[in-house]
Length: 416
Image (cartoon, rainbow, N blue to C red):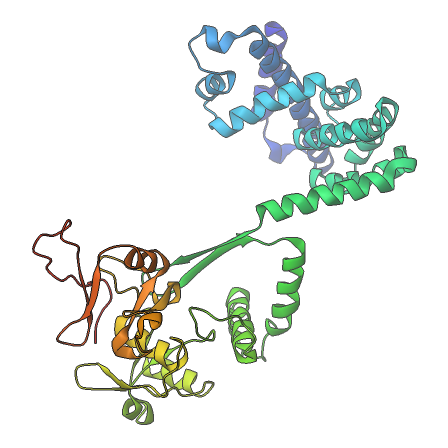
């Protein structure tokens, strides 16, 4: 074998050294076809060698942990490519003879072999050996006309050709399996950047993808000949528009005891004079222009602050810590008020310092914003919450934690 391969290598080197510019166009096309066939035939030889080396345990005998690791070092491959090579060698070894013959004959490539082998295995399970053999012949014939991606798509209905009596049931089972995979893999990741922007990534299942497409596609068309936004920018703006529309409905569930909404804090004088910047409840700031833009599309929720930034009046109080009272709490505490906690307001609920059942009133002086963890912790520990001299909350630790019981404050959230 080695002598034949060395001779083939010499011939290939000679072909490479032959100037292509001196070849006619017809011969160039024929040479390309021949090179491609040779490439597939060499791939078949390579896989057979890998399979034999793997079966003999050559890699472990030479001190490698696996054949893939040995191939990585021997052939200078990435470990992923090396693993795929070992897997493909095993697949080809157990595949029907028709698939191996197609690869060694140069009529299919490795990706097509992978698709054909997986499709034939599905047919074997659903309809038996005879149908699987028919599927090999059909798929190899299709491979002469279609690439691996289209071949995989066509293969989803191969049972219509080789076993129509089970095709519908198999298609239904495949759809159920696909739906199960989609449900398992669905996710959206939201990563907050240091400047307040969000990075979105994820995978939507088929139904959610259809809903998102239906919602944003009409909003992604250019607004006119002067619209210079990129397609990505138009999709961004469309998603933001859909969220604004959802906020306007008033039908979203409550968040932390209040209606879902975007809260921007600014001064009334600054807003009217078009110079006032604003702040989101996360602490991030907005330009004066952005505040004005939001004010045009929102109800103005007044919050009167004194010179030290303390809330003086936010409207009528209620029994529950919600509505204007919660907004005042967010303005004052900025997030979970427990020392050392950096969780933002949207993760928090209002907590009565003196419990309602014990006669405590629902007022700003008797309220503190706490995340779920610290709300439970305060309820079931000896920490004492009290009002500091400057109107902000401070927490007195239990004596076993600090014998001097020096009050502590949250330093994560910026104060006005």
